[in-house]
Image 1 (cartoon, rainbow, N blue to C red):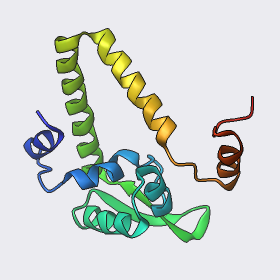
Image 2: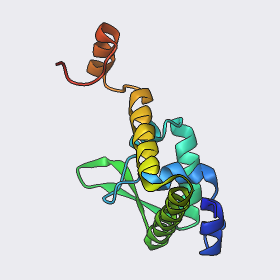
Image 3: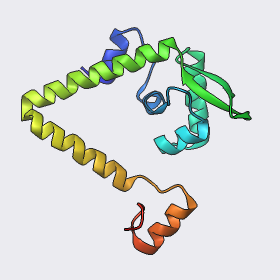
Image 4: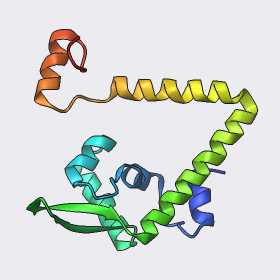
Length: 143
């Protein structure tokens, strides 16, 4: 079963693949649009468009940032949490199916390798990190 099939079967057939990076990256307490754009590596206007859809379909809501009254945060609604649970359940099903095909250890190794690859190719966003990458080719702490 694909993610979209699982979502559709659970009553979330209005979601598309483009919405998943937003739903999957929302912090429980809420996230700013700029954070979502950075984490999903999507242009900010595109994130606004996707969030507007998710608000209109009651998956997320906007609310004032309690630490900065000028900023707005986005968080899941009850419907958004329900979709999130479906995504996790389908992911577990897919992982179990992969384990049956190639073994649990191979799946763990694959997932670890993919996480390392994602970390290695994630763009550096802080000024200090960019400067460090230019000097050393690395982004982590000096060492």
